[in-house]
Image (cartoon, rainbow, N blue to C red; front, top):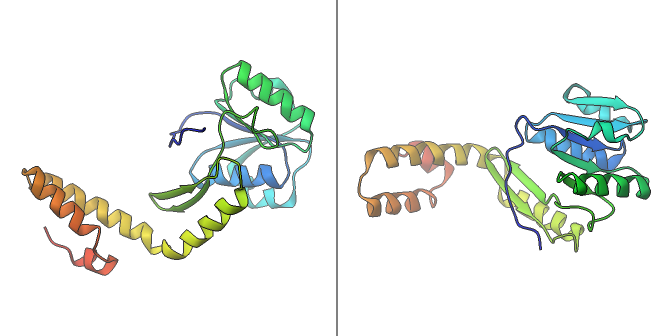
Length: 192
């Protein structure tokens, strides 16, 4: 079973091998979280033009030299044998690797994520049914709409003020529990 974790990849080299739909989706996800990505392939689907300013493209066939100093690697080619080579190399070198067509060679998977600013909700079936994880994510998107970005920011600001103003731990806890039951409009008017 996989252990859920949030990881800061700032300053870490991220490399994706492949230029198809899955590689594009993986690259877009890293970019959505603010990370730079290297993508290695001899060809790229049209959609990569949408993120061309945020990706370092390496137009070449897979070669170990492209992942030697990578912290995290995604093997997303349409060639099972190449993906297998990448997975084996990365596991031998203690790198984080996601082999999209071989979960047994992967040492991490990426859950389906809903991101609203600092609110991140992840859903995983541990590879059993990615379609179910996607469906649950879509259901959550209705409940946690774009307004939650502002909502979470306000909660954070108010939390800091409560922690600074009150010394009694019970009073702090009571107030912190109260504010999460407030609407966005109520939070905007909240005074400490």
